[in-house]
Length: 290
Image (cartoon, helix red, strand yellow):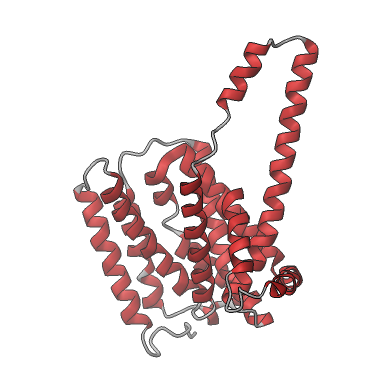
């Protein structure tokens, strides 16, 4: 998470139409800092969504993580209803099409997962934070007129600051704990070295670079898109993106072949997406009227 946030911020500050003019870097950074003040709340949701998603993937794996997050579009509907009222919701038929999408994603990603409470709660926190990010970022972008790429850069700046504070705090706490243990004589050098060996190694440079670039362009395009559509539509498209991740991940990394449940879930999701497109086209997807 730290690598992705920091790398994305660097890319956002350096990749622009006048990147060859180094004098543009400082004004661009100043504008990002100024705009970040408007995106404090969405930035908190951005950090929570990414951090808790990393925990969920580590503890329960891709299968159950994506199964747990298949209701993001439904949570987005709830947030939209609470914040903007019934008038902001699409038609009843359009809302109904979200149900097969959510269940289809769950069926497509189900693959004998091992349940674990901490990982499951982290996945649900990530899903809720992502839905809140969809709604809150759209509201701030509409109010301020900030475009998608600039909004992403501002939010990742705040999220990076939060990540640095947490990383520094965890490192300091761990050093204090080791120092106290050494002072008390409760550990010898062999025990301390075992603890050091348990720390996760740094990923290869090529893999880190690939992850940073992919993360940056994914979120830049996402916030450009969320500025053009309603949060519910964005959440639905995001659900279809996860379906593609499930299918491509199985093809790229192997594992158990797709079961009948998985294949059925793919078709249910595609059916829901088709119904969403049909019912939301033209004026039929407008707000619910009393």
